[in-house]
Every structure is written in C-alpha cells, then in structure tokens.
Image (cartoon, rainbow, N blue to C red; front, side, top):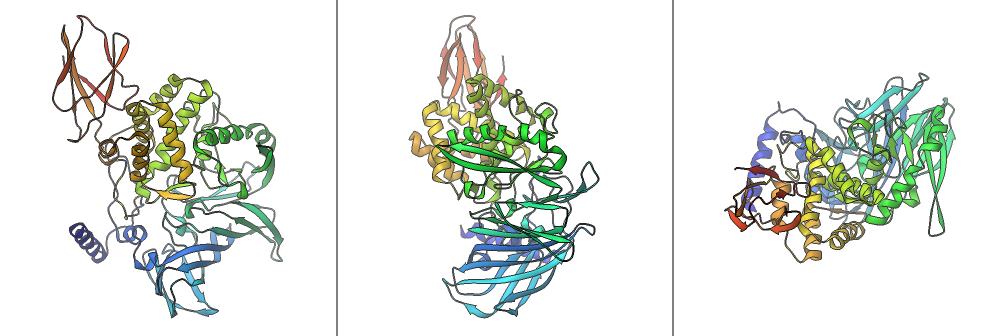
Length: 556
C-alpha cells in the first residue's frame, strides 16, 4: 500500500508541475482511459479538505438570462464537520466567476485551483458542528456538445421557436453550473431549488413544486424541493413552455401522484404515451425492490436532448414513439416499451438509489440497467429466449479494448460502451455460471434492497454473490471487470473425444462452461490445458455462447 501511495504522489506532483496538461473530460472512450490531470485528481480524490465535512443540505438559487445564456446565483451549503475545520474544498468550474463567499454574514477568503475552491474560515469550525456558508457566483456555463454524453446546457428552441433549455452533467459534474462538493459519494439529505426564469416560461426540476412567485422584473421563480438523498449530477433544471400531465400509480390501496411535464403542444400525446411508465415501475419493484422516491414523486419531463435519469425528474426526448423514436433504431424493444422510458426510469434503482462509490464502478448503474432490460423482456413474454435475443442484439457493440472498471480516486467516469453492453453480458454470464435462477434473482433483489439509498462497489456486489452462492467468484470479477480480455474457449473433436481449454484468461479463471452434447446440456470445467471427454462418432456438440460471454475457437 505504501509503495502504491508513493507512486500516486509522484504522479500527482508531476501533473501539478505541468502547466500545459489539458483538462480533459473525465469520460472513458472505447479504446483508452483519460490521463490523470491535476483537475481530475482534485475532483476524484477525497482529500482532507473534502473528507472533513458531510453535506446535509443545498439551497440553490439561480437566475437564468436565456438571451445571454448566462446564470447568476448563490448556493448555501449546510454541512456537518467531521473534523475540526479551518479550510475546506468546494467545487465550481473555473470559468464561472465567484463574487463572494459568506460565512456568518461576513465575507471570507478563498483561493482557486482548477475547479477546486479552497474556502478559508476566519475561525475554526469544531468537529460535530453543523455549519453553513454561501457561495455567490455568475457566468456563462458550459454548453452541451452532445447531450447527454457530452453534457452542459442545451439552449434550444421548440417547434414554435420559443426558448427551451435543459442541463445534463453526468461525468462533467454539477459544478459546471452550481458550487457543491462534487464527488459521487457525497449526497445531501435534501435540496431546495429556486430557479428564476422569464415570465411565460416554466422551470421544472426534481422533487415537488412548492411555490411559484411572480417578480417585478417580468420574471418568475419556481421553487422545488427534494426531501431525499440525491446525486449532485441528478439535480436538474428544464425551462420551457411546459404543461402538466397528471397520472396516478396505485399500490396496495395507496395512490401516488405522477405529474409529468411536456411542451404544451404535446399534452395529448403524452397523456396517451406516458402511462407505460407505470408498467416499468411495477417491473422494477417486482425484481429490485420498492421505488424509493414517492415523497418526491415520479415524473417524465420532455427535454431538448435524448434523456437522462434525473432523480424523480426523468428527462425524455425520444419523440413519443417506440418504433420511430430517436433511440428506437438502435434498441430492440419488440414493440412493447419505449427504450428511453425503461432505460432512464430504471436508473431510479441502478444509479439513483444504489450508487457507485466511485465513478469507475459505474457499470453498477449502466451494465445492470441494460441487463435489467433483458429481464424485462423475459418477464414480459415469459421467455428466456427473448432476453437472450435482446442481449444478442447489442453484443456487436462490445469492443474489449479497456476494462469495465478502471482507476479509483481519479474522477474516471467509466461511461464507455463496454460498461453498458459488456456489463449486461457479464451479468448474463454470471447467471449462467451460477446456474440457479432462484439464487440469482435473490442476489439481484437483496443487493438492491439492502443497499437502497447508499453507495457500493464492484467488490460489494461480489460479496453478495458469495454470500448467496457459497462460492467465491472473485476470479470471475477479476477477469470480466478488471481486464478487457474476452475468455476464449479453444476446442476440437475427434470421432471419440471432445477437447477443450481456456485461452486469454487470468491464471485463476475457473468458470464452468455449458455445452450441448447431442441436444443434452453438459457442464464442464475448462482450465488452460486441454481436457477431454468421450463422445460417440459424429456427435453434435454446441458451445453455449448464447449463455456465456466467451469467444469460440474451433481449431480442427
């Protein structure tokens, strides 16, 4: 551990001295991981200035100037001191201007490095003290290059040439538009949001709408409130000519209200189209536990980009069509569900309730989510074959260039395609390796229920697997999550024997493999030396690669 830490310190010092290192986006690509910049280190590592306090509440107040694409606001941060504090770090992108920071009604000193703000208090804050300070700021926030994958603000017009604005910032971080402790493991207990927009427009955000206040300057402030823990990147705002589309969700004789928001000219289609979200919620509750956010509601919000899993405020931009939507061509939905509604709503479980402790483990959000879609079809059609067909439809997108899980503490958001598609196939493979569906579905549900509203890692998931199966699957995790290498089954047969072995695997890889021998399933335990079993002449043998993510290599 000391050697590893020393190497990390040397890397950080090198970066700090290199003024020409660019601040790259913290997303992974399909072929490499981003370099460790100074900024990614400051955002990814919980140093003493970040770990010394726990945020309990954000009060976010922002005035939007849509014509100038600018914001002016202040955020009050309430926190508990976990140690004695003289200085702490809060985060805001360096291109936004800080006007002042106020503590106990007086301005206090601060310094800035990259996106980090070092706030210096004029007196020591004692451990176990609840305290607050307010950051006043303004500027022109980052615009989205390709939302939601390359995020920021989308400043657009609707079909009637009226302003339509939204933000998406997973990976970039909420600090691109408001100051906060911007680490995935930090969630406030509650959030108040007061967004001021030109009168005639409406701002829609997470949680419940508390008040609407008309102001003297032809502007209107919409106050929203979230009463549950929430990821910083899930806090959102959408601005447009919105109208409400009301619906209800009834469970165990209790009625929950669903208030969707769409552009005024889409109200009728939304009334007919959005009820499918109730079927999605029922499916996820059946397999992964209760929806956690009824106090804050559930709503779909029409957005000027594809969509995002903002907690209790799922944004939607798939064009109100299962077959002809923006995303429909790339996802096989069998005509029964909108791909955006199921994917982003499912994140209310994978990502919003159960959250990765570090963004390098974000397959827990995305891989499990895509896999859950395969289970949705299996449940919907009562057919394992349909779930396999769905997984086969996405298999060609896997590239195996980099591992699903990368470095920790580096602000590395592992949002490359393999996190999604390979992550789903790895879960499908693990189900096949365990070969006991009651145990498999118990693993999934218990993991989600026991870790609701908390943070987890890849290791935590496999601890649950070991607990339920009595078997240590660390060899499986190491192969499929920590290397990019796809196991290869090399095999051949003679008139009397079938030979098989693993290639391209770690030394400890011992996964069982399924074969069909003359139509009957047979489980074998390959290693890295050829093994064999006797067969009749002209036997038909199939490697069950529809159940396992492996590469076949028939050598004779």
